[in-house]
Length: 161
Image (cartoon, rainbow, N blue to C red; front, side):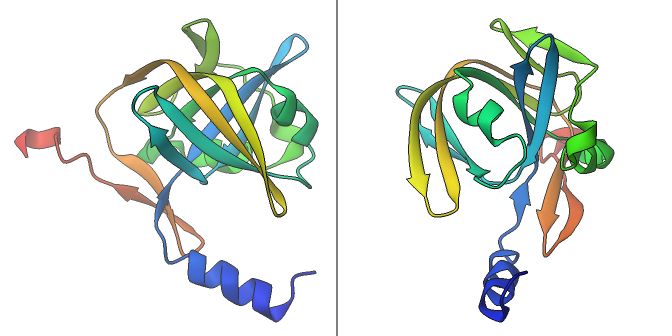
């Protein structure tokens, strides 16, 4: 159970609007997904990004040990996927494509194929830094998360803007 200070901190951090992504990694013959919103670009040369994995996550071992993984930034119409991959019993990804040899979701507005570059302890999370091996982006509004709710960020390049 969360303490009052934990709840207050979570609410304060909820004021920072984020995008929503699904990290994908191979588990045996299947592909497993995990919804994250702790994502940041780290470096352009070399291209690096990071995301954070909660240590109590039931899929911790899979994602903490994965040497290659995909990342899909979800689009406005992908809220059901975001919700789906927050639950353990719906972790399997059925529809995927390969990007630079790494599986990513078919949905989304951007995809990244990554190789683990570094892992760092960060309190109750593991910070995973990935070297970007390949990426692609397509037009469309992005799915956002703000104050505990999903929303959308319009694509400023759509509609001649």
